[in-house]
Length: 160
Image (cartoon, rainbow, N blue to C red; front, side, top):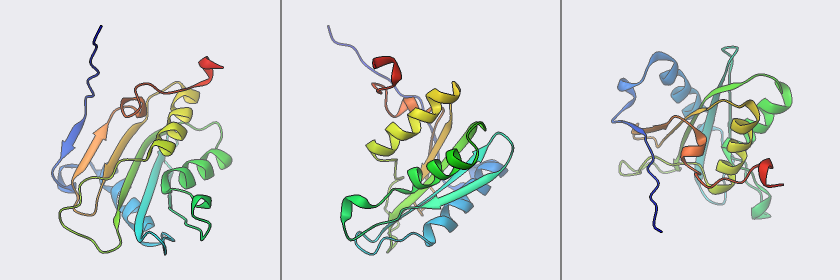
């Protein structure tokens, strides 16, 4: 039996199509991207998170000479937020990434698989979808209304 999965998403041609809060998140993620520590890959990623209390926090990728020891922007930000605000729900996450040397043709950069799994953990924990936006510096933006839309066959505690 063959089945199909469809993913619903929104596409924004540039940041002028975003709401005020979405634009704020985009700008905060771009600012965080500029401070990424990525001397090996030269691939900079910034992330911003909007909490239900209205606070916004951001982070970026951090590399290490022992390459797998680094951490992506999404997990850096998410883990810091979860450690400091364990009972506050995450409403929106905005990711901006791409090569240090910006190229106009860079497409929107989605979270990697490890980040998707980490993000789904918190979406599941809070029992509420998280709006997830991803972009490159060319300002094209993709929005999904739940992390699980990017990881439809996700693994969670129900399998344990």
